[in-house]
Image 1 (cartoon, each protein chain N blue to C red):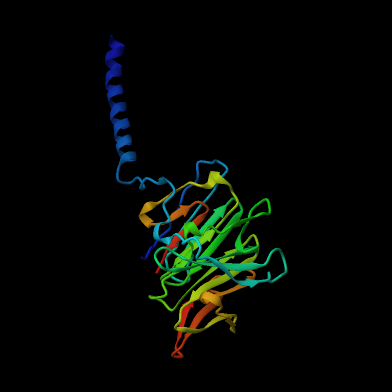
Image 2: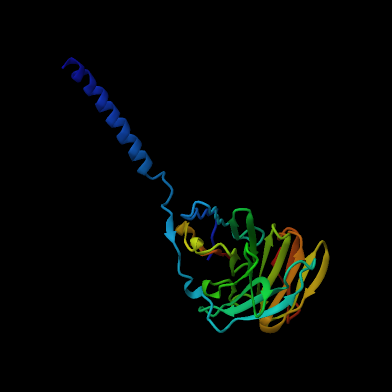
Length: 86
Length: 193
């Protein structure tokens, strides 16, 4: 499954949360997942044909929900950002 | 009465403007509605009992807990890996209170179909820690995994369950490094970089 373009996952209902996920073009030289929580951020890059994810943790049950853009088959699942590339 | 008559056309014009504005806002130019909730991990979910911790490494600067990779099987049969700090027999992320949150395999991970590709690799850079992990899984067709940084090549040992892993001091992207797999037939496949 090949995905292109940027995805912004939106934010949680918790106003203190500033979660963001995005997907770059799914080449092996571009970010395939970004997870951000306040100043904590992780960037993932993956080889073709595999899922890509980053995991941010420890932010409690208030993070167990999010908004996402379904058209990109991306998701912010609990504290993890997943993308399918390649 | 005269005043009411003069206000009528103005009200009509305002209604037309408001209607036009509403139609524009609701129209095709509006981005798709975002969904709120949690998607099921589905076939990406890890199967409980298949996980193990492999490739335990000390932090490159000796800071904090050791690192390790959790490897597990997803429902779709793919092999999945997830790096993190090690504590006991699990790996996870250090939360703000310093405790470890075990990596939740039920939510899936970085997974590879080894029937389709000889190996899968992901690098994850974390600016707050100034660390980059290189983690992945190699299938039976792979004899070596080679990581090249600034022209210097090093072999990443393929361990139990095909897992390879290293932790780098600093932040790296595929522009800074190359990960390749040497296959049993002596050919080489560039996985990343």
